[in-house]
Image (tube, rainbow, N blue to C red; front, side):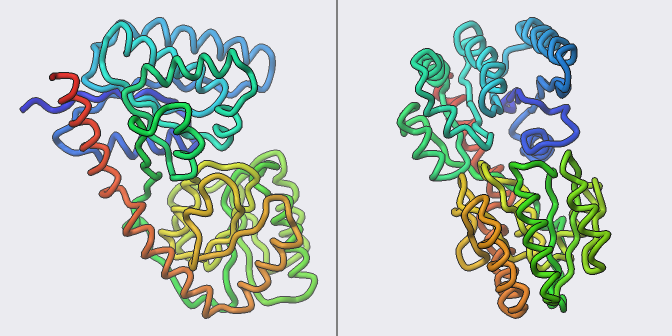
Length: 355
């Protein structure tokens, strides 16, 4: 039997970003029964009006070239909110209307909930048009099913969490003092400011722990300054994927005090590394954390500091949380589980189209 021909559409060429990482992993891990092609729609970051114009022209060129590709059995479009959704919608509508092939829209993005619940009638109408032309819409958790489902229809919804490969991590338990790790972009949305404030408060009280901060961004100076003032804090800047996996395997507590999120791969990677989690009650994050970590409200630096203090002062509990994180990611969020479900979805859509 001929392999099912799948075309993935998304910003695969981005050097960083959760969607690009997912597409790379997806392409590598799908089985022999699936033939995978990727149509890259990544554009350069826009930090000036001229860069924005270039990005728009590049995106238009990508869309104009798309019809000359061979139609697949199934088109799988990865999308986020706002600009990403409008860009993705061109591929969804063309494939569904002109090629007449089943289309999967895979929803990522930290603010897709506010986007899909917009008060704009025109925007909601256009979203409905796009959803109506999808054979299936993938969301990352039950939270997102509840948000997107009323606009799409539950019969076309699939809940499929993000995934990682636990075998790439070698958890180390028993760190004394506990090792706190932050790996993310240094921007307001990721909560780097609250994290730095919490670490500074605990350090000023001479609590026993050590901290490694990785990542970069416009607020990196906060981490640099913290590391200069406290010897227990190390700032490594941007790190490679290999070094990131090492840090997460060495870590005891992974902190992500984000203000908005879907289902962050960063937390799954931290779980694979055997970390207790300290994060916020946004998006689908609560579905990842029960007895393997602690949740606080976004933007609440006092609660973040108090919870971090509780964790670093109970290293045995932290080790137990880390082991539970590792168990959960192996059972629920590993690539073998995801691949099996994706291939089943592809086969079902191909069969329906054939019939």
